[in-house]
Length: 121
Image 1 (cartoon, helix red, strand yellow):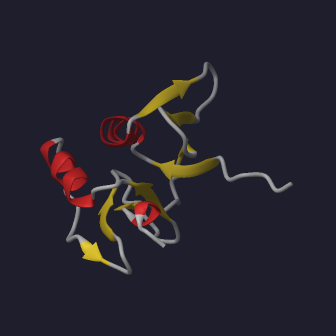
Image 2 (cartoon, rainbow, N blue to C red):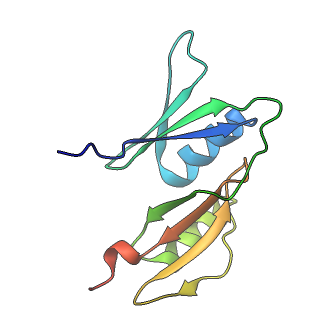
């Protein structure tokens, strides 16, 4: 049996902005433990946990080596709701039977909303 991917570590110099961003726009709740400098963001439903780790002084934020993709059935509707809450996505792209749109979080990590998981195969 292979273990599932369950957590992603995001290094940030903007801890509180990141907590607010992912709780507001993607429905995570923050779990803070005494003495632990990591804030664990837990999804309200299924999905990977995001572990926010303070970035060191030499760490450069927003290197595009990973993109966080959130599954949504209606990309345009999600982007419209996000815009009302202050998150602006780029253009909606049409792919092979699905749509996606891209944005950045407060630490400049690449994020995307995609209907790929809902596309008929």
